[in-house]
Image 1 (cartoon, rainbow, N blue to C red):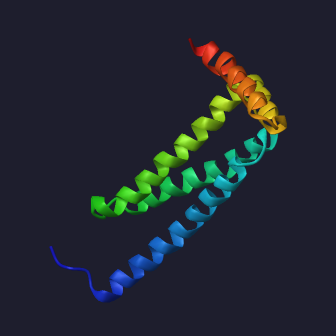
Image 2: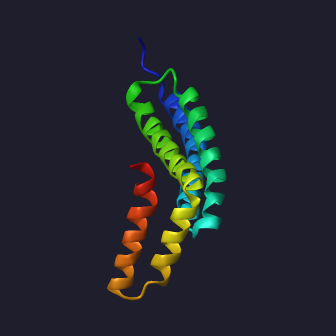
Length: 129
């Protein structure tokens, strides 16, 4: 197998950068949006879905390249899917998660935060056990 020429390597690196920079931008935008308070937090699904689409396109572009070049893109896709799953879980448990966030935002003392922890234990974990 012959080594690609220097010009081919430069063209490949430019194309990879052209495809991966928007991916990173959408992931960062999703990270910023996921830190918003609860009703607004679901806006993060849009940039995360776009980032997932872009990472799949980048993986298809890198299909003929060595596995080491695909590893970071596959890892980023896994992280994006994990963030999307956290949003889906928050949709299903919207009531308890919203109540816990409101309680912890309004808590000013350690005792109040402790009652929020009890609310979290009874709300989320109580539904699962």
